[in-house]
Image 1: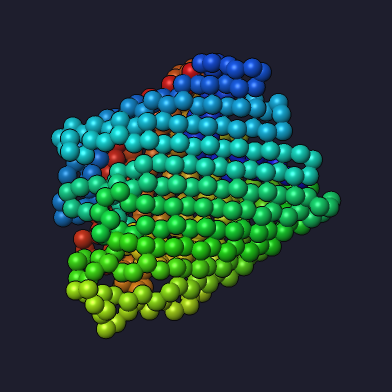
Image 2: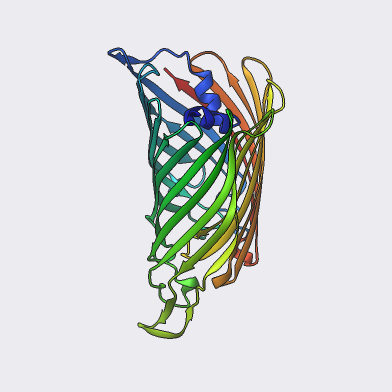
Length: 409
């Protein structure tokens, strides 16, 4: 059986997270408990300039913010047992230079666990985060939107013969808005992925899969104050797919799934002045070609590219069902043992048919990362975002410069 953890590291090599982990692998822990538990202090501090802190074309305002993020990391297992667990927590203290009314404190918690035997692999993850920001999907005038994200993932894969293996999972996501609840809709999604794998070669599997997801939407969504909030509704989606995973080519690794997606949702009445409005939001069944892919091309020992593709249905901040197509290309170049450069380019198209909103977003960035020693890491980056919407109030551009120092001890 192919190690899922090994595949995950292949798929995420181009990211900043893998750079942090790999450059800190030899750091001595702050505290060790027994033979297999280590506790690290894992903190950072960053200085950030944004050209448009509200992501608002009509009210562009630049500002500088400073974030201090003390945190801890607990590792249990050290790779010497069948089970491993990592827990990371941090507390962001954010201060703005000119807009001190936006100052905030945000808590984050992440956990990643795995268990492996000869035939069975179990993996799980959990995260909770508090956020305060705007994007093309959720904007308010002269303020930032606060919301909490909770995510959980549990997956098991069992090899029941030399050629065949089977995986089943549970994926849970929940977004709850803490401010502007009269505008934005909370949503809770539960997804059940099922896959059967057939070994084509020792390094490549053919996959047949089915994903079912259910999303509950409630609250918010006043459609610009014209009507009272839309009643909550439920949206179901199916994804029948075929694909490959593993070493797809000599230097190409990862996975891709392609297939048929369909979605259906309850129709919802609009209300006004406490009564039922004459028309409703009609959510007829829809379908499209679905896609989910993450591919890594190892050009050389120093240079790699990662491509992520997706074509799916999701739910916007106003509770609207929408079609989303996205692509992101990331390049990672290891200059030497201390310096790394990373560039990225992303594109997404969001089509909310039922409220007549269409948006395209282009993003790009460049980052340099430096590992001083086993304890200290530094990075500097530039990011650009452009959101183009058929609603003028949702179009904006934003540029961001940041400097970050990370201490893991």
